[in-house]
Amino acid sequence: MQPSTPAPVTQSWSISDESLGRYVYFASESCIQELLSASDASRSDTADKWKILALENGIEISKRRSGSFHIFRSRWLLRSVSPQQFITVANAIDAAKQWDPDLVEAKYKKDICHNLSIIRLRFGDTSKPVFKNREFTVYERRETMDDGTLVVAVASLPKEIAAGLQLKQQNLIRGFLLQSGWVVEKLEDDSCMVTYIVQLDPAGWLPKFFVNRLNTRLVMIIDDLKKLAQACRVDGPI
Image 1 (cartoon, rainbow, N blue to C red):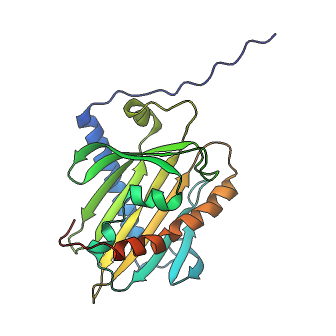
Image 2 (cartoon, rainbow, N blue to C red):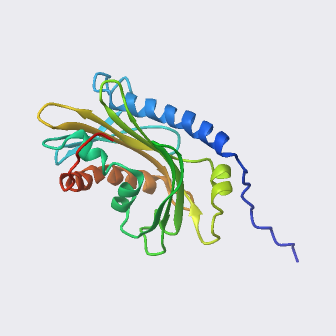
Image 3 (cartoon, rainbow, N blue to C red):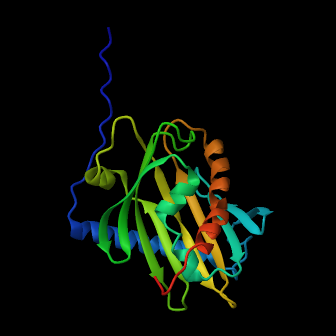
């Protein structure tokens, strides 16, 4: 009789608030620069290796190869929706609600500073296969650039740091939001150009082609978020 193989143990790192803040700040800074680069309309899609997949309901959907999981981008000109209106619903929690209605937990776990937070997202056993019994521990950073462009950067913490902040439940799979976020550029007549980026690794035993196909649907949430934004009234900047 062969000995049983012990279950893998996820290593966790106990990290101080200062070290956590420093790590998340620099990681989010890199994510912000990636988002701004992806939203730059002056760059050639061919040179930047973006491939346009479709134009649906005024939304341009593109992808770029990056490792096993493609990065997907959607861009849409939102008329009569100001950047301040849209940015109120451009966050990790509202996006997750659009990804899958069976989101069972969405909590701000820790505030690093006024515009940088740690969030936990948990999906239940009735969720879609790519989210079923999965959790994500992500940072969310919101910045206003010098030209008024609004950026929201969201990505997962490394699994060791996430385990130190929130022990993973045995029945859950810890997925990874490799990078995601919004770039909202102000235009005339209270309109804005919104670029949304997402690269998701749900982990577990899912074919990569299936995950990449689903990611093309995730970037379509701009349509749903637009409706939420139109229902919001905003009196000032973020």
